[in-house]
Amino acid sequence: MIELLCERFDVDARVRAAAARAYERTRTLKYPVQERVKARVLRAFYDEGLSDSDLAGTTGYGYDDAARERYESLLSRVLGAERTLARLSIVSGTHAIVAALAACVAPGARLIAAAGRPYDTLRNAICDADHSLVAHGVVYEEIALCEDGSVDLDAVAAAAAAPNAAAVFVQRSRGYAPRPSLDVATCGRVAARVKEVAPHVVVLVDNCYGELVEEREPTHLGADLVMGSLIKNLGGGLAPGGGYIAGRNDLVERVSARLYAPGLRSALGPTLGFGRAFVQGLFVAPMIVEQTLRGLDFAAALFGELGFTVDPQPGAARTDIVQAICLREPELLMRFAIGLQSAMPLNARFRPEPGPVPGYIDPVVMSSGAFVGGATIELSCDAPLRAPFEVYLQGGIVAEHAMLGALLAAQAVVR
Image (tube, rainbow, N blue to C red; front, side, top):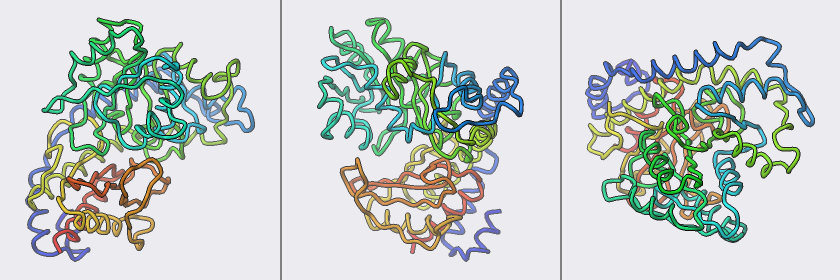
């Protein structure tokens, strides 16, 4: 396949040679964790016992929407949660996270970020924007990661033991930071340590980009809530939008009251005929995630062969669908984005340009040609124009398409 792609897309000799070496390094990689994830999802469908009539949606208020109720039940089974709120009206992962934080941390109470500075849009919503949580009276504290990128559990425990502590927040994925993503076991250790010193403190995990990558989810290991987007891993490339909050029943109810209205809570919310896409997307999601991991491993090997620093390394254990590639120069970021864009199934003739993005401090350059707008389970990349000039390659619902994108991005960088 690599030889065929190089031939069909006129890849030059240097990139072709590096691609051949990268393919040899990655073609025999096995993904045994994904077999267990597939079994988890299949068991959830087996236990749920869906019928075709369950997929009929509603409009308007969405009372008694069977598709919504069965989909949320499926997600609870998959995520190891007592309850899930999954709605089209939750428009992004950031929306889901901020709604959960706002519901769990009252004005005057303390919110502790256990993994250092969150990614730009979320930190903006927590403490920088005009109507941020801090602006409404929340006390906010960040615990810096250790030098090796691990969580400082002692510091987190000390902060959680403070009298006004209400919640500890863990960002699982690296975001726009040159640090490793956190695995599920680390999220579990944070939850266990917090509960030792302060059982009442809520542990919330930003699960974006991480769902179905590992055998278990943070909720299996003691996290009270996980939040994320339905157009990332769980959507399987089919979900048209939405976000979710999953975990303890009482906390999910508290979030639903915050999102909608006290008294209404989670009784409303039409699926607008998209129930089939949500459910089918979840059914194929483990296969899509595996395709993504195969494509990212090849990209890591290719850019490693070309002399760039990559994280994770090809074949290393992964906890999310993000591949960091340190390109070192802003011009190379631009060339990477242009090359990747040329491989997209939509908008391949567009030229990415850096610009302001709501919630981000620095100009950001992005490549995307997704069938679902913003769906980062589909192939994409983005990068803030700031040192160390890392680009973050994400997704790829077909491994061969991700390989092509990496080839064309590498060719643009080399040239």
